[in-house]
Image (cartoon, rainbow, N blue to C red; front, side, top):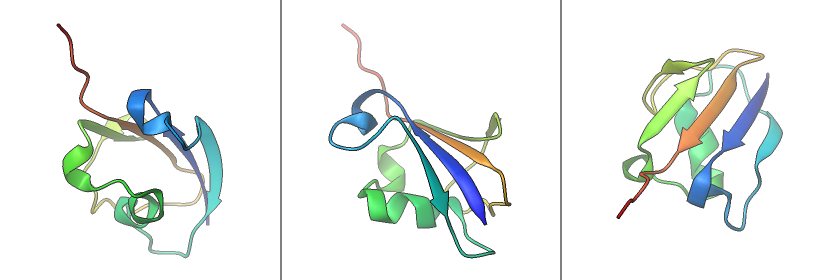
Amino acid sequence: MHVTVKLFASFREGRFKVEERDLPEESRVLEVLEPLGIIPEEIAICLVNGQNVNEQHLLKDGDTIALFPPVGGG
């Protein structure tokens, strides 16, 4: 199955902004995070097709995943 992964803010450092990924059927968001070295606790917002989900969300072909880290202010 084919998904689009979008990284935001500090998640882009040393990685990418947008990337297409091929994953096995029945993959979860967690299978996208692991090769990127991102642990679920580092994610402030995880969206799949604009809907807030967690790392156990089951992905479907054509999904778009957007990952946001916590944003500090000051």
